[in-house]
Image (cartoon, rainbow, N blue to C red):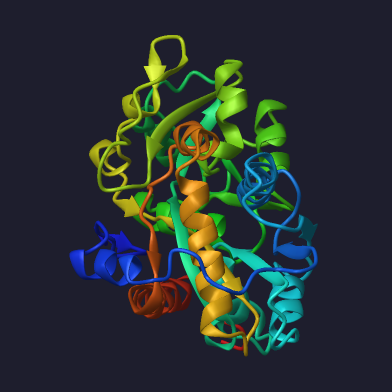
Length: 336
């Protein structure tokens, strides 16, 4: 059975930590007007929730002299947002939060954009993906759900996800290959809508990020079956009854040999100065020290890897190659 590895990951290296420690603790440059925070995705999804949490933390702790203004630009699978930032050369008062559509959108749509046309700032975290079903469904384990899919005709089961030819559908194709069965993939505008559709029984399962379905899990409306990571999640705070994120088995251990993690990173337009980049690296290092950020990491069961500088650029190079391979195999490359 083919093993799908979207991203090769590890702890931040000692070299990376050294590079980070060399950055100035307090850069001389700072914003002198509101900073636009572009979200290349719809409202209610994981990227939007993280951006708005960051906005709140920065305001509450007075970490920036001006406001951070969140603006959603989800058109063209996020291409609208990326092209906006690409065209804002030299503007240090605009940042964008990225997810894996940083790689998938240009490959799937052919829009004239590559991540190297932006200025990488930092990886804030990596987001997990979980296989969810409605809590009223009879499937208590991933094995039971897999068996039901295998026993039914192709396209019987409906998988809901965010967008077409993006992360959720890439994972769905990998699941189909692992099970040898076809699913009906139904795209929605964002992870919030995906969760609502699952609770309403309009789809059979989703591969939503933890933060996108945690409130529905707390309310016993959805059930997590497995996580698409190589190891179980470390978070032990109880969420639903006696269950925590650490209670969820890996999909691989359940016979579903699929792994995928997604970037949550910050970029700036092209042509900004090193001093301006350093300001935002320092800003987000301060954000990571706040209790509100730590709570978000727990609630959303994030992988807390942080990178900046050359280490982050090297990681981005590898992630782009891996996504291209996955999308070629799925037949999602524009013009192919």
